[in-house]
Length: 393
Image 1 (cartoon, rainbow, N blue to C red):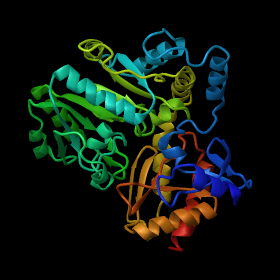
Image 2: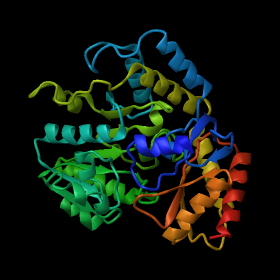
Image 3: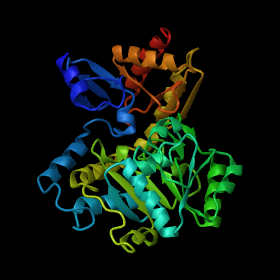
Image 4: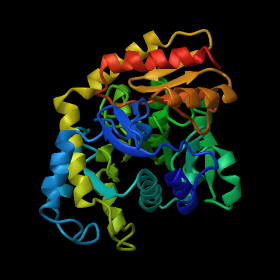
């Protein structure tokens, strides 16, 4: 096909084997290709379309803002109502210590900013992260990501990174007075939905308090209702020093956020001033869309629905080839223990009108992360397709 050839030749490819679906339309929990074929979307753009594709309230917010202004100035110089309102809405959902927001463009930029903030506030050089983690593809974010296979070709990366084992308290001893910050996903997404245990998070929070390291929670995948709470750290009894968000925050538009206490955040404004800057951070259209996303999640009680629908998935995902289902809300990993089988299954489901997808760092499993407002009927229809194709691999 001409479109496929142009896609492969004119746009840089991230692999030689892209999913290669030519999208013509998206609505709710469905996608349509340019032939008119309809697909159930069990992936939501990798946990982006939490409120579904083209939610009317998001579209209305974008349209209203587009009638006023688009980009007017680099972030932080002009007071812009969508940015102010978004910060207020975010803070209303968070503990009082998380009261100051820096808006950026993406998840990796939010994490880059968080690493810089930890170093600037503490005056320290070292960082800690976790094996199996994924925090983005730019140099700093990649440096604290755990997948060496994605890193080796780009070394040297940041120095002074220590990697800990998730849920192993002994490793917390690696956090000492030289460590500026510890970055953790409360639920590791790319590793295949590996959740931090509450006791471990409590011990981690105490160790950071004792050593003066800042605790950074990367909720780029797990935030905005996906795990059954607005933010996954709310399943535990701890509060991070810095929270990072992106993906589903914008309802389909690009945006990221770093949130902390004002006393910490303001250190980016001096020695040097403009310690972190961004031209398009908090773009007015994206910020308006993000405000709508928060309103939708609360009004439609999508956190509660995510938990209930996640349990339905787990009940339905019964097959002799399924070895394990790891599920928290609508963040789900299905383990079949066979990388080639996963690849084959993804292709078969695509042919039958169902979109599932792989994990970068957990190739013997596949991900399910549909819109939070997916209907139970659509869940059952999609799982039926999935189970029928498991018989064929």
